[in-house]
Image (cartoon, rainbow, N blue to C red; front, side, top):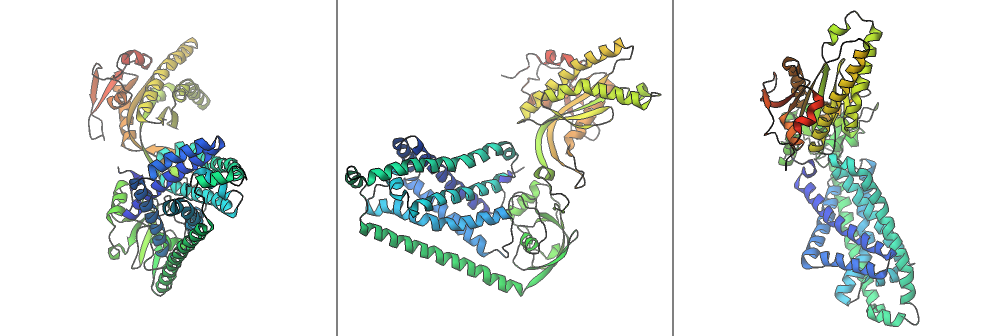
Amino acid sequence: MANPLWRGSWRTKARIISGLVLFSYVFLHLLSVGMGLFSLELMEASQGVTSAIFGNVIGMLAMSSAFLTHLGLALYRIAWRRTLRMPLAEALQMLLGVSIPFLLMAHFVHTDLANRFFGVEVKMGFITGVIWNTSSGWQQGTLVLVTWIHACIGLQYWLRVSPVWHRIQPLMIMIATLLPAYAIAGFVVQGRSQNARIWDPTTGPALREEYNFPTPETFAALRKITDSGLAIFWALLLLTIAIFLGRKLLGNRNSLRIRYIDGPEIYGQRGMTLLEMSRAAGVSHMSLCGGRGRCTTCRVVIEAGGDRLHPPSPAELSSLRAVNAPPNARLACQLRPSEPATVLRVFRADGRRARAHQSLGQERRLAILFLDMRGFTARTTGQLPYDVVFLLNRFFDAIVPSISGAGGTVDKYLGDGLLALFELEDERASAQAALDAAAGIGSALQTFNKALAAEGAQPVAIGMGLHLGDLVLGEIGAAENAPRTIIGDTVNATSRIEACTKELGVEALISSDLIQAAGKDISNLELIDLDLRGVAHTISALAVIQAARLPTLLHGSKTT
């Protein structure tokens, strides 16, 4: 399956790449400014590292191209919008992004251009000292926060479709919070100190000469360049707004009907995406990636009128194929209806419950374990319901700690059995946890049966099937009653493997896929081939008569 982080149109990919280049510069720059907490020397040495990366010809070309690309695509996206209705985070990112050039212009002109055209030595000592306790200082502090928040929202929209993001999100939130505070603290420490040095009657003249301090004429020229740059950006922004308003006025004269099977009937403007139509009409429509064509959560099924719609672009088609969408499915953020249509939202927030991201499904390659108690029906025939429940609870109390202790969870109880999932960081850890759990269950069962024997009761026999493969994890069910569970061919195959334990008279059957994923060498193991009903291919498995002896069977099977 294609990486969802890189799905989308060429414009989406260009915006991501240019944004990452700019983010890397901002990140290094904030680290440099924060070094002022320790010393000016460290601050300027760190500035030198950043300059070495971005100050050469290749770095300057990458930075200028990234800035112009990111800005140009942002203005293009605003101009070609049909509605300004959007989620709050997306609106905040857009407003912050538009404000960045206004805040950045003076800083760019008085540092980069001052150095290139007027020979000013724009070291950190000069910059922090000159703008300390001035309106420019406050403006640059605001620029730090605005740029950083804008970048973090962009990263959130980009990475939220990745399973890894949800594991590292707490760490990223901590970094996102601390880094700008660290940079501002470094500026405060050095700004106060360097401002005093620059304007000190004794040290100031020599220091200003060392920096080639701008003359009044130079400052006037820099202000003129700044005003010209701001005027150009104002013109671009006003042109963008004019295009947006013009397209909106023309679009109002040429509206079309969209009927939602599970919602209202709306009228949208030709040229708008279906997602924009939904938002403009106040129709809730999920879109985790912000309408960038990557997450596919905005997809719809075209029930009528699909033959009159434009075909999907290669990028949209790739995203739909990645989730095995049916032929009549489309992405609402990419579809621009030109004729009336009837659609069904695949995912929608229905007002009763806002679905979490995991409810949409997440594909992982993990180990699972099916367990069943043998002869349960015959054993409990004629017993009181209380006795049946008491036996089951004692049994589960005995074996489930082996699952949770290995890092697994019980996905569901199946009467006299269970399905366990080992959702760890990677498939190797998941597979090893499943092996540990199986061995632990075998030992726990022996202890449990000893207790039953002391009571004069018959021992309990079990069968376990362990397998590893691709699973779909998600919240499945009605909106207010959707437990998190797993589905997929791997679940069916594992259930079939467990059923074979009864025929073979063993406590466990463990697939070779799982054993190899745990880093074990299977060449010295006696495997059997299982032809399972409903499973397309033969599965090799290790038959384990007593699960408690599993570690002994696998001893020496670690790969090198």
